[in-house]
Image (cartoon, rainbow, N blue to C red; front, top):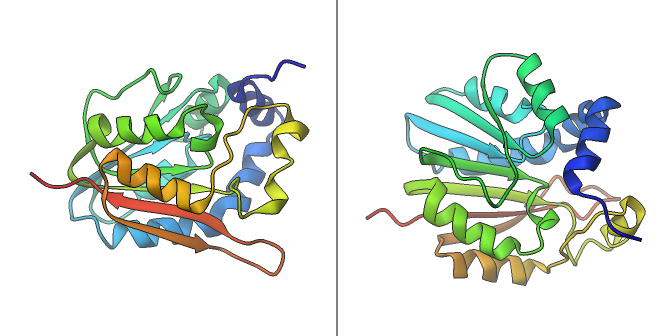
Length: 206
């Protein structure tokens, strides 16, 4: 069976209003991620959410003290249409990794996006080189990773490609992409969940 595009899956979810459940389900992880990252970002700052879905993280960032503007990008047309309908903001419909923003950002956030790519390490390099300002911070979370056994069946269950990497492999990818001060965290863990794997790093200020 040919796997379907992840963007088709997310458009299906948006049309069924499953994006609202995704927002609730990821809220604890994203709150922890942003707390980690915002402590390292100067003020004022610009931000972009890669794989923004219905734009809820962009709206949260826009409401954060010192945020000049927050931009969202997603490959799902239905998700972007929903993001634009829920409030003001700059949202781009674009397939990644081909698309690149016209400006660079001080903070780059991504939740549950990278592993849908066939080569997430190359995407991390592109984000470092072409998306972040000097001294900018990337924070990205993934729930599908080697140490989370419960996630291993997701690709077949959803008929979507997912790249399975270990925490060590994600950390290596961050380092190889050029990030410095790389940190790896597990956040929002419960008795039934090993936690979202969070990678964070900074682009060296020149």
